[in-house]
Image (tube, one colour):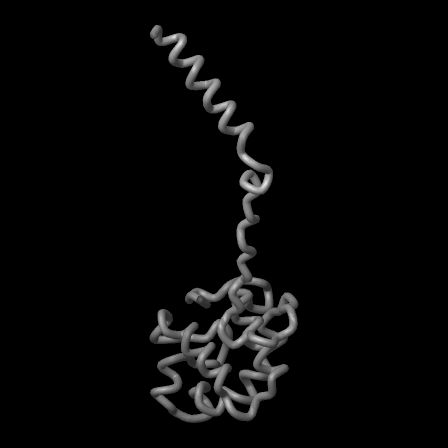
Length: 140
């Protein structure tokens, strides 16, 4: 049998096979929808609004400054994580800062859910300063 005839029979066989497949067999299930992962701590929070540091500064002043602001007292352990005299904060451990911030705001006593949602939304959106610039350390 010549190569041309073999090729024609092969193509014809493919066409017949495709025609014989039932409509149910042709249908494939749509790929499952992936639910975007909610960042840690934002479970149950409303959608984030664009924010700057000025929007969350009161939370840092009320809940962090006592330990993280050197002028209010020396606390080497807390101030190693971040020192909050000015924003962006200074830190000795920039690679740990993001995870530490998230962990602290998730479990911190004395803040309500709205405050937790606000500060974590700001953090995950890039922890922008008042002019919209990101900090010099990673936020994720």
